[in-house]
Length: 459
Ligand code: AMP
Ligand code: ZN
Image 1 (cartoon, protein in one colour):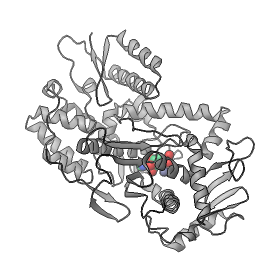
Image 2 (cartoon, protein in one colour):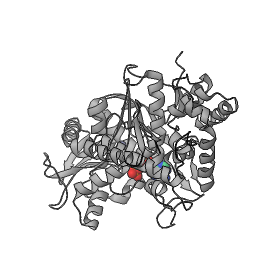
Image 3 (cartoon, rainbow, N blue to C red):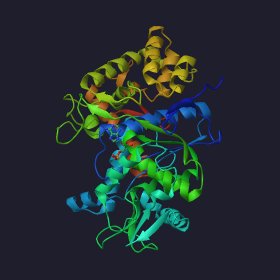
């Protein structure tokens, strides 16, 4: 197969560019992960699904084992401290619990585990090292137990977000602090009170600012410069602008990452999602409860509903969209597809659509065409590539297999997702327990090479 040309929209240049990896033997991608203090909402699922699709596509083009995907876990943050105090539990207990839920939620969305999921609290030494280097190069200064990045010290600050300087300064004035030399200077390190989590540092006991966490984790796992950095559009400023300032000034490179990719925002039935509007939906609720549309939704339906819209466009999350996605999946999982052998080549047109800045709407319309043309083997390959293959939910039970209700199927899927999370956490005792639990009900699991698990009902 001739490798297709991959083109990606780069926020840094505001244009679609041909992707050329620094090292084609190891394509390196970093995506900002969740702050683990509460259930992830369906907006948070968007970057997870979008960059999982890109990861799968990169593995298709450059081969599995030649792509390194890092998605961090932010487990030190003032929101975490506040929530742990509110619930009267230990911070570590809160972050462990929340992370376990996140892992099982995104496994149910058919997202592959990234190659590395670094935790901020395990990279404090790297953060201190970067901060020391910034101070030594006059890009940062210590004051009152804080360390701040000196924004005026970096000529190219603002290149990613292209915000007018006066707008940035006005925004920064909201939080005037006596220890700041410049209005826009931002925190790299801050002091911790006795009851707050803290680490010893050259500036006293304290904790890192949010931005430095990603500079440290991407450096440790991907190096001083790497290929792709992703996240939601809201992260462009200040988070990504500040990551760039820290990493470029510390390491002295022209770029931190070559390509900066951002997904558009998600709203619900035409409105901004918020707790006060009562339209706040978590991934967990969609999978496990009947709060949206009075029923549970299989992970593959949520995934397809997300991919129907191009990742850079805003997406409107609607009941109608979920119902259509479900009908499509049912239609695509016909018996010939499920029984077709694996390994057919991905049709060139579909690969080309995905390679054109992840044009999923186009890919989906081509999938409809494959279905119409009766190309079962190709259809199966495409569904597997895109993480949309879910025969256990959509295929009609084969001869001899007892019929299971949609409810039963989605319960089985939920247990499988829990087991994948247990395995990702290397908790093999729990993973075996869940396997046996299903076996007792006649459900036989098969672990696939791509990290997914499928099942069969032996009746
Ligand atoms: P946060 O936990 O708020 O830092 O968000 C985690 C990720 O979810 C980031 O990449 C955000 O940009 C993204 N995100 C948060 N809210 C939404 C939304 N409504 N739509 C799309 N992406 C979102
Ligand atoms: Zn980040």
